[in-house]
Image (tube, rainbow, N blue to C red; front, top):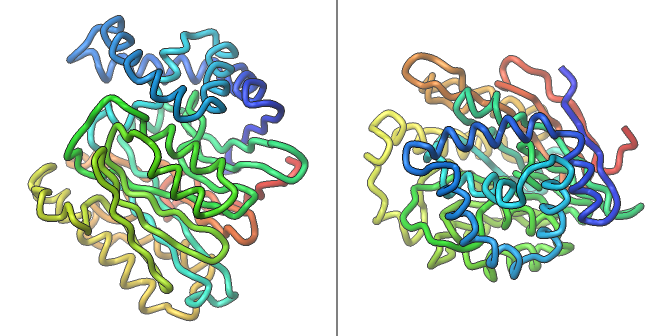
Length: 350
């Protein structure tokens, strides 16, 4: 199955406008999903009233993203606040601890390349209603962003033509506050030209929630555990892996009963499995081996490769391997064991 790719270009507003127009029906579907998600606590009017509290922080943090979001809303024929609301999924939606990510330096690869990537594991209904796709945002002839997106969201993960790559995982919500949503921070990181600027984009945000980012360039790999109050940095000249628990200074604050024993065990097992794969394949890691990592079913159904079953209605909705130095993503639109990975280049013409 070929990936669903949308290419947009022009100013931030023009890119947003093209996104909104191309995905109008899908954005409406995702907005309806979101209203259903929050209706147990708020009416649609109350939800938008809550969302408005975040808008000043978004607009102060990144006027560029503000313009793109305005374009999306205009193109989709929906409210500006509704598009902001979609970017609050991590802060308002249910905690879904299932994604697994990794990064390995060129020292460990077969072809002297940095490799990074992740599985994107979410509830089956979200995978359907958010209408995931790949977006290629052309800034100019030499600059672009390639991102995994939900309909109406600027970016969910990806890479840019400067070699900056971001993959990530959700974390237990030790604290939430009104501030800059996680998906806005992701989008801002992918606008940066150096890894230092990418890290600074996390530091300078008044963060609304908790997350674990894997930020790489063509040489370096960093892991960032962040809460609204704190940032913990991990660096390696070898490899890093993520699942859905804290490894740094907050590890003693997390209660691994937060999602039930099987799911809590899953994050530990997936984290250890990914580290084991990179250790055992050190010096010989290439794209095919990375894809093989994602096809692991140890501890099924709470494994790296996820399939919906009665006791675990989550699916690996997508997975990808990124080569920042080559400007390419190898993408599978579903469980890795059932799908081929297709190359998508950041500056490809199609």
